[in-house]
Every structure is written in structure tokens, then in C-alpha cells.
Length: 155
Length: 155
Image (cartoon, rainbow over all chains, first blue to last red; front, side, top):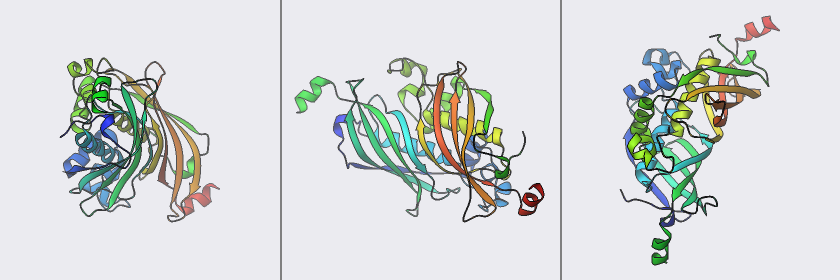
């Protein structure tokens, strides 16, 4: 994947990640570690829940979304998460669902405290194999700028 | 832990979770699965980052917060996450940090679509062993009400 810097982006840019399969084994493993509730833990206990079957923890979907996002944008030196708003899970994720993340850059500004970084605001929408939205969020991250010399030579 | 229902809670109620250690092994394992960035993946690569050492993925802190919250409130039939706002990571989490979650109930309302459930809004603040805040969020969740008969007999 191409390495990205703050300076490569503009508002309205869109990216689409690769896809990843949410296996039953992974769903249950995540639940045992981080979200031990009946509708996440086992097929049997989940059958008796209002979901009538196993569903993924929303935090598992969020974590998998981060993986797909990080692999797609691939910021040089990394993207440092500052915060997330409007994190929603409009539909459940079930075992075997295949997730893809669509990212849109919604704002860009220079960092006041760190001249070598910029702040990006982005919308991440996670969809399943039927194109249904399973998660949305607005996130802010600090990402590296190209060195000043590089910026001058590109301008 | 005591099992909770919507009807047991009132605005302003506070809960404190047990504590949990964020080990270096867990941090690195989570990063490989969900947040493969240099400052999360290995001690060596993290040394060269602006954090000058390994830090936990914010999503790992969020997932661990869910675990502590779920174990503390222990809702009968589970808490169904509806959304999260103002998720922030004001301080980094490093290997060996010990996290605790403080929950405050900020709003309660009946569910219009599901009479057997209520909607709670809560603030979760995650602190480290020095009492420093490492994560804050506002979350909404759907939780079960006591059966109507039980409610009547309690009133």
C-alpha cells in the first residue's frame, strides 16, 4: 500500500479498504476477552437473546475497522487517534460477515503544537457483504506532514 | 456481582470497576490483530516513535473498558450498545498500567419500541494506577427492565 502523509490528502478524498471475514471463532474469542455478554459468547447462549443468534461486539467491529483503515491509509509514522464521535452500530455483525471500510476525509488542519503533524477529521463507514452499514463514526487523528524541504520542492 | 436492571438505576448513580493490568504481551497481540502501527507493535519500533516507547491502541483501552464495565454493571440479559460519543484518549496507556473504570449514569428513559427495555446514557472514565484519566466516553445502551409484574410489586 502507498504510504500517506497529511500533505497528500484533501477534503472529500475517499478510500476503500480491503475486505475481512469476521469468523465465529474470532467473535467468540474477542467476547471472552473484552465483552463477555451472552449474545457474544456462544452460539447456544446467543440463541436465547433478542438477537436470536451470535453477534459481534461493537468494539470488535470498531477494532476491525481500525485495522482496515490503518492498512488502507498507511500513514508514514502512523496515525495517532485523538478522538471519536458519533460511533454507531445500526446493524449487527454476524459470524461469516465480510467487512469493508469506506473512509472520507472531512477536514484537514495544521497542528499548532506540532508543526510536523496535521490533524485530519474523517468519516469511517463499515459495510457488510450486502452493502449494509454496520458501523459509522467520525474520528480525528494526528498524522505526519512531509518534511518542510519536501513540501517546498513539491509546491 | 449483583445483576442489574434498568429499574435499579437512577441518574447520578456511580460505579467503580475492578482493576486490570495491561500487559506488554496483550498490548502487542491486540496491535497485531487490530492496530498494526509502529508505536503499538514492538518495543523496538515504538522507541523510534514520538511516544518513545510502546503504547496501547486506544481501541484496546476501549475494549478493556467494556470488559470492566460489563463485569461491574452485570445487566441481566446484557447491555446492548447503541452508540458512543466524545470518545477521547487524553493520556497514553503503557505496558504494566493498571486500569479501572468509573461509570456514572447520566440519563435514563424508557424505550419506545421495546417496552421491556430502557435506554441508559452513561459516562465511562478510565483511569490508570496514578489516578490519571486515560479515556473518557459517553455511551448509550439498551438494558432490560424488570418484568411488569415485578415492577408493580416493587412500587
